[in-house]
Length: 129
Image 1 (cartoon, one colour):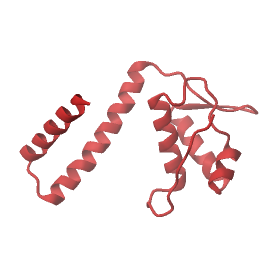
Image 2 (cartoon, helix red, strand yellow):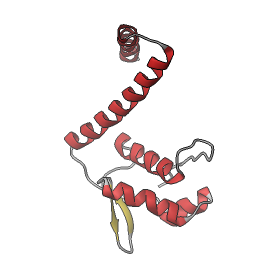
Image 3 (cartoon, one colour):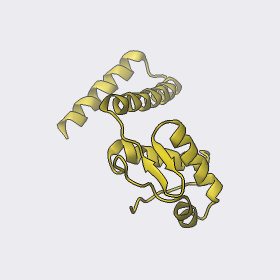
Image 4 (tube, helix red, strand yellow):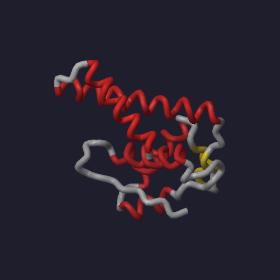
């Protein structure tokens, strides 16, 4: 498995959270398949030049959220997920993104109508691709 993780010390997001988000995105996109082994803690730590404990925290949270399962002595593996659960998790991501967009729109002074119009335009553009 040759997954490329990118971390930023300047982002303000904790490193373990950046790792967790990228692995979760890889699982939801299908880049990491059900029952596939995730990159080892030591491999990630070595490649990113960070502590194994930092990677361990990311994997612990992924396991708590039901994305991976730690098998003692073998590593972490992607958990098989039903389509309803994947959809629900993607809906949560959409909700979080919308909340952030609404916050920015309010700072920009956009009205609800302007925001709806912008969403309509973007949805039409996306469907053309």
